[in-house]
Image (cartoon, rainbow, N blue to C red; front, top):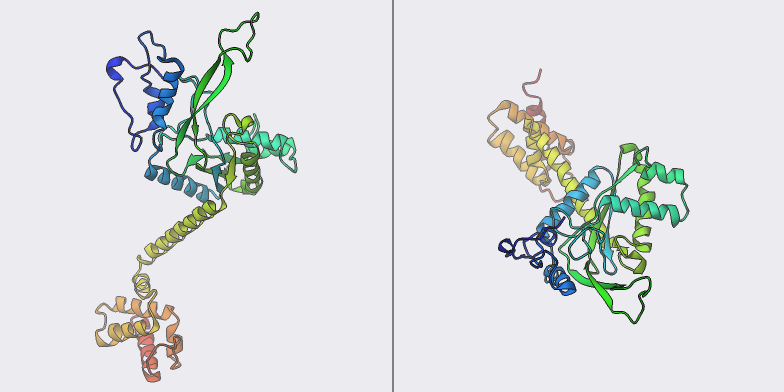
Length: 365
């Protein structure tokens, strides 16, 4: 709950490039008069809202790291995700308490707008129950999304921004002041504008759904289809009935993230393979040979097994076995080469094959 600041403490300033705009907006409101009311009436409220609209909010590096962690978690749990972009203004947390009357949902550590997973789940359930085509049964919805007595098959993660975002001040004027039952409000009365904070159009958010158990993965496709349709058709956040909160699925951004995650996964697998190979002499030599052309390997055989033999017999044997594992000596034994660009004669090829065979078995019982 926001609290008024005493005058001698209300001298802080927000650095939008580095500060947490959420903490500033919710905790440091300094537009209070001596009697602890918000000074300046509606102008004071609008002034406070505009303190976070001068520049984009959020730290680019932190948002990128947060997005990467969430999507890596989604991939590790065999979940599914998508990048969605707002088609118009988006507002979240409007019902939260705040001195300007309308609150805002700030991510507690990133200081940017976000959509809690619980809200996304409610949106998807409402869509599945009322608008999904074909319409699933209530039992099917309860199995997938859960009920008061049993957990569902999927978990919705918070939807977070991919990059710093521009916030804007908006206004609604649904109220009239000073009316009563005897004098009801009408167009001749003075309206009371109510300012509130919104997220600008074209803001990209990452939405993720993961299975609760490995056996629940089959429900992901159906749930993600509901999510995609709900974000486009019904919208998320507040004021969706007047067009706020509509999202479109951004296929190019989604595919780019999938490729990046696949690349990271391949790199991790390769790193694990190399780490395991490093545990044995033969494995270490296989890493030395990896990616080398046939002529380079032939030259290493000549050096390490003939010209300047490896001193340690066990290491020498490991080198010979690593070369044998490439399959090249099978060609050399026949006086053949696998790579046409290799310029080594038949006699030399057979000689190298003999070196591999003799050193590869040397010292073995």
